[in-house]
Length: 399
Image (tube, rainbow, N blue to C red; front, top):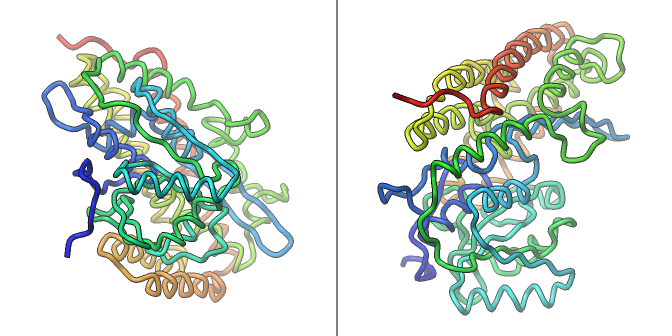
């Protein structure tokens, strides 16, 4: 039996967390290119601002953790909202601190068949099989596409709707403090768009925001400055936040290297830190605008190779890290094929064991950090030049 989807829903799935559900909402709302085809994932990614960099390593009393975000806006909501702003799309955004009010609004959306974007805590979504305690630390934008009795169907990367209990979905909606019970709907069907002007503006503004921190105190951790800082910390034996000191013990090194594989290929990104997707966008931008972006596109393609090499360096450091990354890929495959929550939880448990049981030698970890630093330095050179070109329009008019 097919899921009872809303009548307006025809587009599902994609490659970019948060943005693919937004892309599908726009396509079902009428967004089309001049030739009548729907916009690609790459085009939507570029119009949201494209690539970026944010680095954070945190030491708590009981554990260490690492976060790298590879896109222009670090969090899901600003990324999606930037997309709508750049496209000139009118939406209505609702937040409420009341679970009762939020539940009433959700049921109204279900009853009226309104395809809606929601910000949720990923750890509470049945179909992901993640640990529930991750909910408040893992915001995710998904799309409501169907409803029946006590279950909802969600558009979230897979090419089919994901089944989630209504109770779990309502709990997930309340898990993110800054976006509690947030929802976004299109105000009206979408008409023709001035694509050349829209794409050029998105390229220039995205390039200029590449080095802009979400808050001033993060300035040294963002964009070019952040990449240079990370490159230095990877080989700094004196600084307590340098990787040879902060991540020198076996479990800490395993945490850092396993997190790298997730942050650069899965979390808030597509594989290769989204650089291959952005290079694809620049190729489409050349066709849409008549401006030749081949030079910055080539630089981003070079950068993509270095980002992928970082993941390879991390995976090659120890068999446990390789297994951790394989399990992440398995989770993604299972999610797209309709896995049970239990299978996801089993993967999470095995991944935790991969990190805890990793016996990587300190010398091997430090050598891996050094090799990664070399890749990061190469990324700085590629992306600094590419962003400089893109910030002023990127190229020259095609003849």
